[in-house]
Image 1: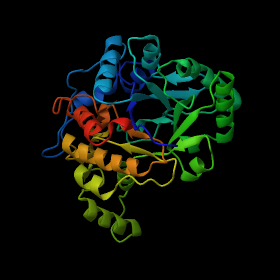
Image 2: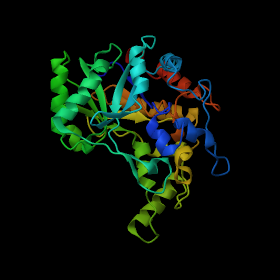
Image 3: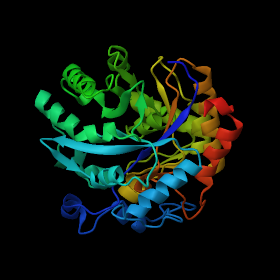
Image 4: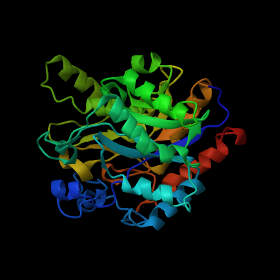
Length: 376
């Protein structure tokens, strides 16, 4: 795919309004803000709680919030939101109301698409010591995919929905978890063509490269090479003397982090982005970047924390990635940013109490200095 314009797309989390399921699992009125507000520092110099800035502890049931978010994103160079979308099968959905409200609100003139977050929800995500299933991701074959497509169709038809070559862009979080990938692709593409599109422009978030390369319809995977590598190393809690124990010590020395069982996994953001750069492993690969990460608000002492995640270092990460994107002209011209507003994971672009709009200002500055006008 020829590259003539690099677009910046940011993941968007809709968990900022109460739902009955979260009330049941976590307590009445639970939202993403519940964990954010009660976060505490775990070590000297640890910045917690990480609090929102000018948008405050917003509620996505208030339409003006999404309008303000869209205006901010557009002003600072974001080209679209990727809404996480939760379809569990048999018509069961969660957190769908913000996207539905946005679809009806024409005051929001901002591009968007969906990422089907096809993953079973488990309590361990929120710091529980067990892996109890809260709600299971299921698949119902052709009829299930038809039902899902029918729900998505009004969004696909909206003039704001991101389309490539008359194909709605549709991200899938875990393509390899779909038990009948070929059937899923066939049903979605067939129904898209029946409804006036030329198919669906699928993007794999996490997928085996073989899955991507063996399916002409799939682009991606979207890769945060630094981030994913670090998350993998987080699981190393083996005894010294074992093979993985030796690996753990070598990685510790190289990346300057501490890893003790039940203690936070601490990395230096500035060092990590220098050591592990985006690697374009094939011609469908899509670069992904992250400005910050500290999910101690969500899971406490088991967290992974990037210290020295500052707007200045974020700018270095983004510049390095853009250089690689420009050097790989055949790859899709997108940079995916993780994320716009995953506050309980300390992963956001929205203004915060410490840096205000500086995370966004980095994007605006780089777009106007690193990229020629024709490339943004």
